[in-house]
Image (cartoon, rainbow, N blue to C red; front, top):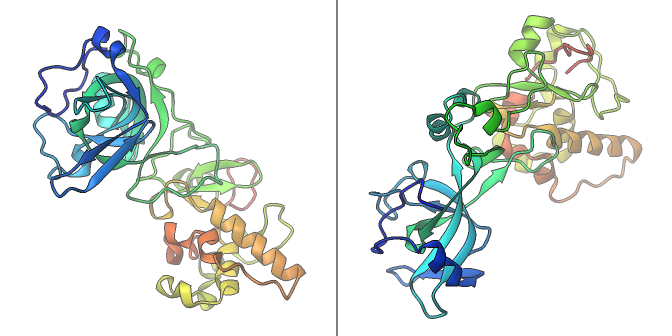
Length: 332
């Protein structure tokens, strides 16, 4: 369990040996009292910032801090200030590529991390605050949105093998891809459209190469029971006459917003967020269906949260064009 990263010097000569570690008492949490007497409590399972060696607390920007998950908290006794943490590291794509030569970081986003099996023991004073590294499940389009500033991970790496510098494809779980190009999705660089027919995501650049825009548009719910047939030349501007400005959405009739959103293709990446618009658009289409079946339908008070309009560029989305699916040829 020797050190693989060197955390900030805590004033302790060295971490406890394995023998010393096994004799220490286990705790579910520990509390740090700052100079201003503000108290910070950390718990098992928390994601935390770790200060690298040479960095000062509270003066280091988040992008220069390390991310780790607390696996164990131990100290010699209940009154001991000498608290140690066993942490599991997250790696940035660039860091991992330096350890695993076959790993290509170009398919990872700026805030993306890779969860490793690498563990170290660091002093509790090396912690510089709590954070959250969110799990991005590429197979679940209904998962909660991930904000533009949030760190996230979608794959793992096994760094315990001596072959780690040469066998990246074996030691890093491959990023999934559903597009015809078989290339992974980079949320910072790629916009993708989702086909509800074959339930696959496609890079918009690959769609351009494969097909022209469709002539008929089916929209509303995933079953295609509602139709809005327009020529391809109208698709990119079909909602403009009824669209609220994004800044005014909170004061806008929810029916207007839901109808505009229901007519949009499902997208993800760049301005549309890491997870994408599937959940919000699905909610909008459900609301539209309820209005059609019940004119007295009352929109929920949290309708804007259900539509997730704060997690993507609404103004841009409602002008997004439809295209033919490269696989099943349905409009996407």
